[in-house]
Amino acid sequence: MDSYVKPIEIRWSDLDPNFHLRHSVYYDYGAFLRISFLEEHGLTVSFMAQHHFGPILFREECVFRKEIRLGDRVSIDMQLLKTREDHSRWSIQHRILKNNEEVAAILTVEGAWIDVLKRKLTAPPDTVKHVFDKMPRSEQFMWDK
Image (cartoon, rainbow, N blue to C red; front, side, top):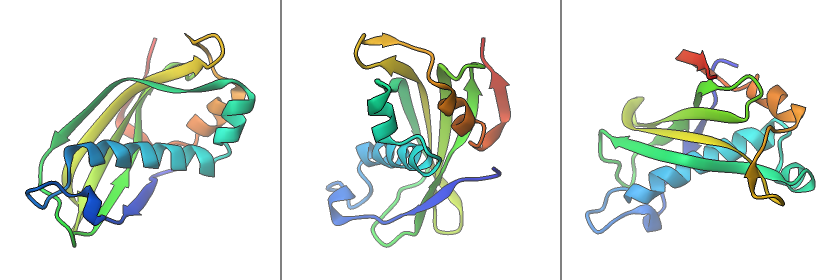
């Protein structure tokens, strides 16, 4: 897959007192897109619940470049930066774009999978490999050790 992009609708409640997007909303957009991708490719929340595993984040970082205001056209994409061969750990980057594809922010997350019963990191089922194989990869993509 070359790209995975979704448009975002800005809500009044997404704004801060300066009338631009609150910082925490960028992180919400990233979570929305990651879960949308997983769901659309068969890695549903119910599948994860049945198999007792789910995603966990170690780090989330956003670099803000341009203000986003109510009325801006916004979209978000995602690219896999790195992953282990078993996809037990991974890094994903999102670009939040406004209007004419201007990069407003870059959000990077590093995560893994956790066994929700044992509360320990785990290698995910093979289904995860098939889904991650469909995820767009950045030009800087690398396999992690």
